[in-house]
Length: 227
Image (cartoon, rainbow, N blue to C red; front, top):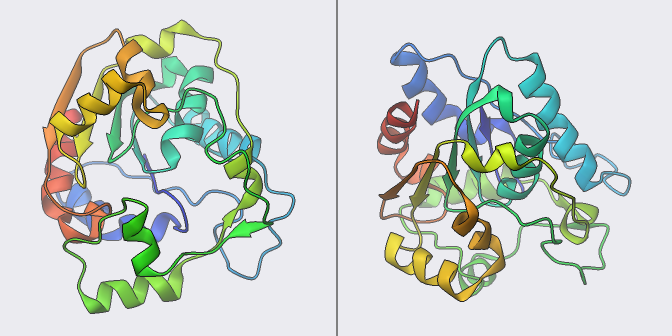
C-alpha cells in the first residue's frame, strides 16, 4: 500500500507499482483527500480526513499490508497505523519518519500550500537529485496544492502496538548516518524512530527526495525486501 507525500496523488507511484506487479506483488496506491484535482476546494480537508483515508484502506485490505509512506505521509500514515496495527505487517518510511502527533507547520496560514519553486524546495532540504527536465515538468503540471489544515493540525497516538511493527527506513536525500544524528538531536519528523521496539532495517538509497521517480527499480526492490 503506497502513500505519496505532499502535492502528489497515487499516480506518483506508477513506475514503482509496475515493478512490484511484475514481481507478483499486489499494489494499492492511495490518493489522499484534496489531492486528486487542483480544482477541488481544500478548505475543509483536515488531517483527520487523511488519517481516515489510510485507515479505511487498511481496513478494506484482505490481510496485513506493507504500508509505504513517503515524506509528509509519514504523519497521517503513522496515525493510521496507531488505529490499525493488526492490519500492518510492516511499514516503510521513504525519506521520512513517523510523526509524533505534533503539527508539521502549526503557524501555516493558507487554505493550501502549492508546490514551491525548485529553488525553494531545495532550500528547505528537498533534494531534486535524479530528476530530469521531463520529470520536473510532469511534477509541476500534475501537482496539487497540499491542504493547509493538514499542515497545521496534529493528532493523538494511543496504541503502543504500533511501536512493535517491523520498519524499514529508506534514506535518500539524507544518509542513514545523518538521519540517526537527527534522531539523537530530537528533530521532530524522525524523533519517533527512537521509540520503535520492533526490528528496524536501515537502507541508504542515495538520490533525491522523490526516489519513486529517480530510482524506481531500486526502490521497488527494497519494498519487496520489506515484504
